[in-house]
Image (tube, rainbow, N blue to C red):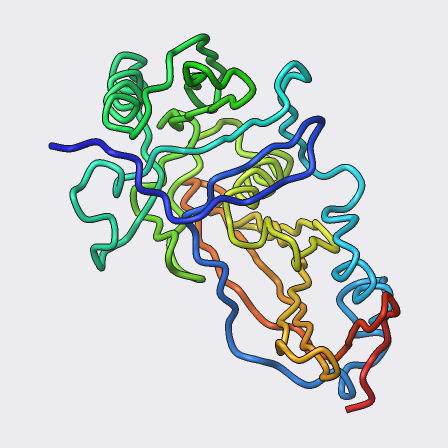
Length: 282
């Protein structure tokens, strides 16, 4: 069986050095709820004004709120790519119409075999220079001969932390696997959701996390990232659309079973011209 990496896109994240995070997720949004004009101040999902949100998206910063999870590599490398191996990386046709998810194992040797095979089948082999191991994943660090500034971090989740076998990275809602970390707390769910965000299409220019917030009930924990997405028209004088969405993960308190859903909260129009950002009146 071929084990060739076939992730579909690469996303930048502002860390200590230039870091790229591979995303194979589908950052789609769900049905649109009432227009901005119908949302009262009390119902507004974030504290930022529409203009502040638009300015953030057009400038590209800040992309996450204060206190958001950071995955900072060593400063000795100027270009770092981080990725998780997925089930589609084990198959001849990565575009097959079935769920795509990150792999997990609690066996270091299995994780290393997946990483080594993928490196061997890559257009240019990258030498293994270091390995890391924490409670969440195995990590295999590689560099290409003649290109020491490009540092590749390949990761494999530990099933004892999270099992994503039932997740579908191409879907905006449904099962998101099972969080096996114990004790199961709101803080652990927050860390997982903010970590997973790095590997989605939302971790790109034109997207910004405005708020990261949790909630709980007698039977479940949930964590929501409120994200602003810029949808350009492609016409410099026309209004672009900005959608605010809620990307929510819910964990069953007793089993750790995860569900994800995505809801559009409100849309509004804005444009940027000659460096000036303004809202559209309609």
